[in-house]
Length: 540
Image (cartoon, rainbow, N blue to C red):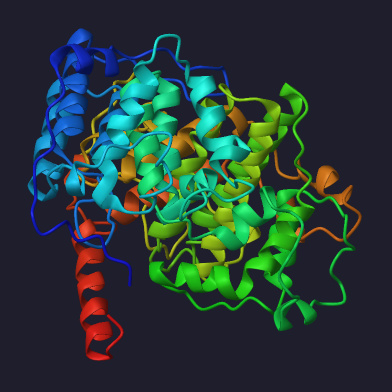
């Protein structure tokens, strides 16, 4: 197990000047494109002031990881999701102080007070001891006169020089795009927030995060996207390729690729843990690469981009949302790991608004590749869409028997006799279930819920109009039989998944307790137990 214990001697990081902080966090900008998520109105300037105060405090105070198991500091992600959903300043301040500050690790100076420069950039990649050294480096980058988000992203994430250098320079290849999607796709979320809100300090933090993440997906991202000429021998697993596999050079839609992977006997159905992601990369990396090579994604226009962003939104929702469902009577699993496929997909439009078509292609391919690998790690659950979409939507009562009600718990208001469409209609009580879903996400103490619900709401805004069967013609053009369950895929899937997710984590606004699903303490206890086991076996 990889750990990130701090150095023996901790020297707190030197605070930035007020002038530097004001330049790093000057305010918030509008979304960078019409494809990026819209924002809900808030209470006015006090909300923005509270947000910026907390962002600056976190920037100065806290490290990127809050424990030795590389668990991420989520405070920024939580705050910005709340802000985007219209939270008032007092709520954001409470979220920051009461759900994050009690377990953060202090930001500290790099060993020997190392200063990162262009010359030694690769020397300390992958080591979180040097987070603040990389943060200081990226301060200089984002504050350089004339610096722009597009130029910074193009250089540090998508250029050959910051991915695979020929000849190699220094102890490590940069592999920055690889690192960008590491440890459950977190750096892309952080930089994505910077791109969405136009905040230079978040771009600096996110790229420093990226720099200290491992390059674990070398088998996948770097090999596929930057060194496509294969140098390793064919594996035994590759030789077991099913006879029905499409020929080399085939171009398929993302949903068809998921269908083929569900049929492929080389992938198991066991649910693996976070640390087994690396093992999946090593054992199945080239098999996964072959599937991703088939994805028909080569962006040449805005139309191409919009098409592929929609593909990935559906795929992400299926891998997490429908994949977490085991029937209407069963507990909804709300898989924590595949949930990050959804939350990270939200930032693809904002990132793509700043980069070239070439880089958009690289980003979407890298994201798809990483996402389906996490789906495989979590047992590649199938998509029982016929059954999943057969039940009534909230606010109408669910089919009996059901694990979760389509009616909110707690006391209900009494609609006036003039309420539309009638005082006895479920719509008079809950005219738009999304209001209840997002209100619960705002006050729920779990920092991941608001991010998932915001992403699903965004997908619903853009694709909720799709009727059942909309995808069949496109999928059938790939030239083989389409999974019949895709005939039932429609725009209601986003609301269905969001409602189940809210129910699984608890309707706290309506009086239910936080169920504890996704609480970091549970994952930390599991990590400690695993570490003790590895120590007893002499493996740690």
